[in-house]
Each structure stands twice: as structure tokens, then as C-alpha cells.
Amino acid sequence: MTTTLLTTAYQAVDDKKGEDIVVLNMEGISLIADQFIICHANSERQVQAIAKEVADKAAEIGHPVKRMEGLDLARWVLVDLGDVVVHVFHRDERGYYNLEKLWGDAPLLNMTNGN
Image 1 (cartoon, one colour):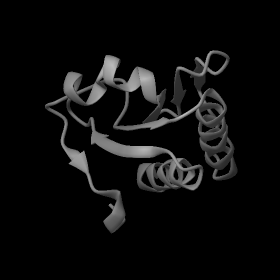
Image 2 (image 1 turned 90 degrees about the vertical axis):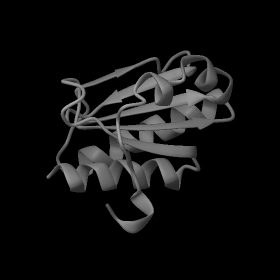
Image 3 (image 1 turned 45 degrees about the vertical axis):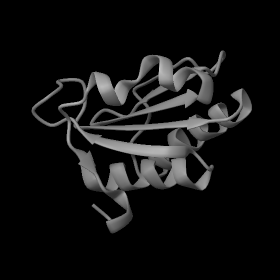
């Protein structure tokens, strides 16, 4: 179930041209979620479009959004799908928060091979 949700969310980010997409396996590291998807966009409008696409595609497969924060300002939108949390940053914010470093002990998942 989580694999389908993860793949769907990843594809939604990719379809809306999210940049530098990173997937972290948070299992055993965080109680928040099993996976984090982290990406950025170049404008507030694109950040919003990516977040909305993730929410729409997840709902289509029966995973409504549990919580979405930051959509109005579109600098860092968090889309909580339960087992998968998607972080959509504005390019200017991503380096500042540097979630990849914060969660540096989390292994990367390679989604290009369908993992």
C-alpha cells in the first residue's frame, strides 16, 4: 500500500516538474512517516501546483491528504499523506532548511528503478 502511495506521490511531483527530487526512507528513523519526498520549484505558483497535484493524485487512489500546510505562502508546502510526507520547497528555501542533511541518517530510495 505504501509503495503505491509513494510511487503515486513521486510521479505527481515529477509530472509537475519538481526539481532535484529526493526520497528518504524514514522507516525506523522517524515516527512521522515511512518516506519523505523532498523537491523544489522555481516559483510560488509551481510550488502550489506540485502540492495540489500530489493531493489530487493521492485522493484518486484512496489516500486523502491528512494535512497540508504552507500552501498560501508557497515557500515550503508540507503534504501529509500519512505514511508518505511530501515537502515542496521554493528553490530559495530548500537550502536553508536542508532536510536532506537534517535527516542525513535516512537512506535514499532510488525511484527511477521503481523502488
